[in-house]
Image (tube, rainbow, N blue to C red; front, side):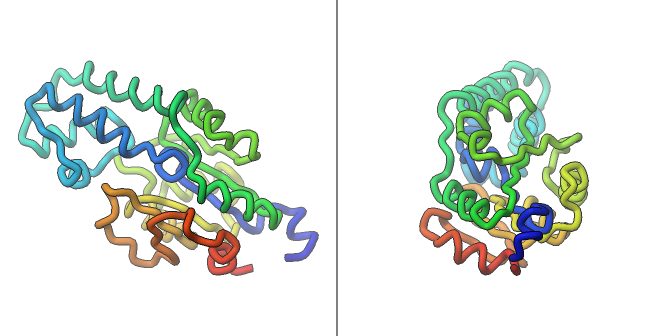
Length: 230
C-alpha cells in the first residue's frame, strides 16, 4: 500500500460487531432471557434460543421466545427491564475485549487501515462498553445505526451504516458472529470472517472467507493478507 493510500485511510476498513464479537454478550443475553421467561413457565434451552432468532432488541427477543414456546407475550415489561439491566451491567462492569480481536485491530491499524465497530445497543451503553473494552483508547470508530430492526444487521443496515461513516467505497473486512450479519455484510461487498458462538455455530455461513472457532488461534497478518486484497 502506498503512503498516499495509507494517508487517505478510506480505501480499506475493518469492521466488527461490538457486543457479539468484541464482548461476547450473547451468552449474557441467553442467561438473562432464560431467567426472565422462567417466570412465564418456559425453560429456555440454547437450541430454543437459537431457533427464536435472537433479536438484539430485548423486547423482541423475549417475545419471540415466548411465542416459540406457545405462551402469551403480554405483561413482559418486568422481564424485558431485567434483561436490559443485566446486559447493561455486563457491558459497563464485566465485559472484556476478545484477545484475538485486539491483536487483529492492532495489526490492521499498523497497516494504516481504520478499525470500526457497530452496535445494536443504546448509545449510552455502547459508549460505556467501548470504554470498558478500551476500544476508544485504541481509536476504534463507533457507528450508532440510525435504526435497529428486529433482525439486525441485514443488507440494508450495512449499506446505511457504511454511508453514515463515509465508507461506501472501501474494501471492507467484516468480523461477525451470525448468519444474519454475515449475509448482510456479503451483500454489501465485504470479505467476511465469522467467529460464531455456541448459539450460532450451526448457521449457514456460505460465502465467508473464514469461519473460525477463535480469532486468538490465528495470525492476524495472515487473516489480513487473505481478506484485504491489498
